[in-house]
Length: 299
Image 1 (tube, rainbow, N blue to C red):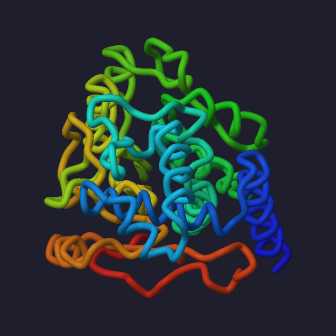
Image 2: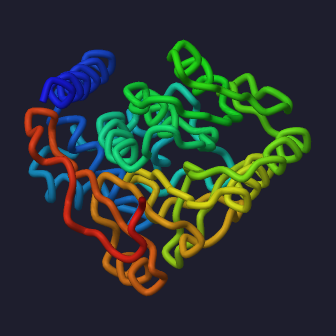
């Protein structure tokens, strides 16, 4: 009970920090998140349609679009908003705060499916960094990572063994990539590979922006007994240019909102288990996990 209360306080604190940092109320953050969702699903939405849907003035929607465009979450067009670039990812600082409460909920959910004394890979990504934080209450884990942020989070935990891969360090997010990274990963066979992606196409293709990062992700998949994909709802339908694999190749998807119906059917047909950490404000601690479970049961 104490751990749950502490986790809920962390969620509320995170939401409050993001809200204060951006100078926005929760209602504004929620509206802007929904605008991003609509753009992801439809490709383009007009200012007039958004103003009518959200019952606000066109000027308010223009301000929302300007802020989202400045953060790289949508592209501003005359009369509306469209998809951002498929060839360049958002800045790390933007990715770290966007959908933060959802990422924390996903992290708490996936951590509950990792037993003590397990071995795991954690790859590059802001969601996997939240997973690292959620694993700090575990015992005797052995972690291999190509993410220096993850290594820093976990390295002070007594009883953990943290192994950092070789490779070239990317200054923008402290990720390690390259042939040395891949060669290092191939030396192991790990219990759990926890991966993140930049986008999930409608046909289930997992996508990212960096070819070198994709090759590392493929090595993690090939050398893990079980592969857990962690992806918040903004990744559904998001476009990126480099293919990692199909979602059918993972054992479970952990997300913060129910995916589109077609993807749920695809997961069920492929025997991929789906876990949903309900999207709700931190004041609703009982709303944590849905019953959307299909296919392969984790240990």
